[in-house]
Picture 1 (cartoon, rainbow, N blue to C red):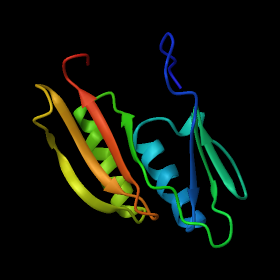
Picture 2: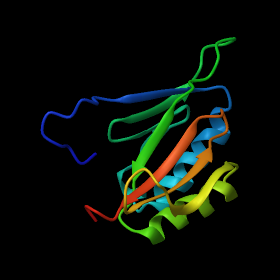
Picture 3: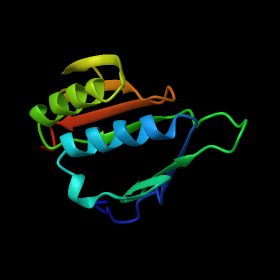
Length: 126
C-alpha cells in the first residue's frame, strides 16, 4: 500500500462466505489495477497491502462495506470493471465521470459477497 502520512486506515479485513469466488474476483481486479505483483496469498486467504481477505466463520454473514481502490488512469478503471465482471462480479455502476467533484472517474462492482467495490481515478490529482 502506498502509505500517506498519518493515514487513518491501518487495514481492511473482509470475511467471505464465497471465498474461492472472492479470491478469483480480487485477484482479477488487482491484476487489472496493475498490482498483481504485490499480492500474497495462501489456500484460504489473500492479502495486498492493508487489504486482507479470508473466510467468514461458519454461519456468520460476510462483510458488507464500500471499498474504493485507487486507479492510476481511466484505462485502469475500465480494466478493473471488465476484469471484475469476467471474474464473477456484478455491475454496480459502469466506468464514467461522477458528480461528486470535477474529475472523479470511477466504476463500481459488487463482489461475490455483495460488497460495493470501486475503482477511482481522480483527475484532479492524477
